[in-house]
Amino acid sequence: MTASIGAQTNNPDDRPRYSVKKTVAVTPKVREAAPATTESETAATATTSAVKLPSALALKTQFHDQMIAALEAHVGASYHWNTTGPNTFDCSGLVWRAFQDIGINFQRGPARSYWATFEAPAKGDEFKFGNMVFFSGLRHVGIVVDEKGFYHSARHGGVMYSPFNDYWLSRIDGFRRVPLTGLQTTPAEKRLVKPTAIVPIADDLIPR
Image 1 (tube, helix red, strand yellow):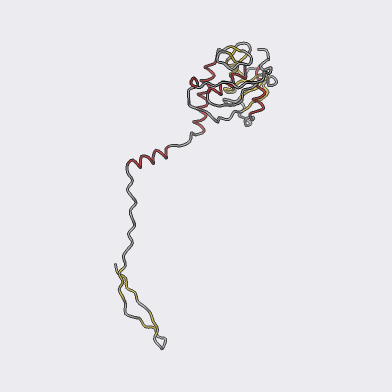
Image 2 (image 1 turned 180 degrees about the vertical axis):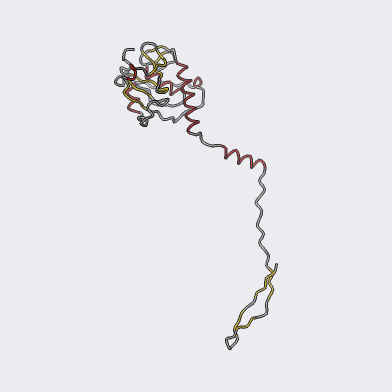
């Protein structure tokens, strides 16, 4: 490719004149082609793009399924004060064990210690699955399923599901929400967790 260039100068009488045109060769720039992407690189990129953190819905579903399985695995166990299973539980011991079974760890203690440790759920979320529900002056605690019922370890009957009937609704102190930090996919039966020692405190003493 060529281009003509003309130089302009002035005569002594200030009248413009043009010099002889010179032809200069101009080499056009060629855009370098991007390196070809191999099939394996394309697949790797697609795979990387597809890997995302679990969505809130996926986490919620995972928590629900694992917690229900953990609680159901203990249904029928007897009540015994200050125990955390595997065959007997008090109310706070069952709550602690159920969360431990799915990989969520916190300090083992009486019901009132859980009340002091965790935050209240948002207004309207009190009966959300997995919340702790407290009764009778923080002396009893269970795990909410929904507005219809909850799991707990009762002095009379052991580990069971109970409906939120008039008896229980009239005794509710409030609710606490447990963060899902540490939720795992490892089957509960493969995780053995030893409770930390606690100072015995009268817990779960209401008649049922």
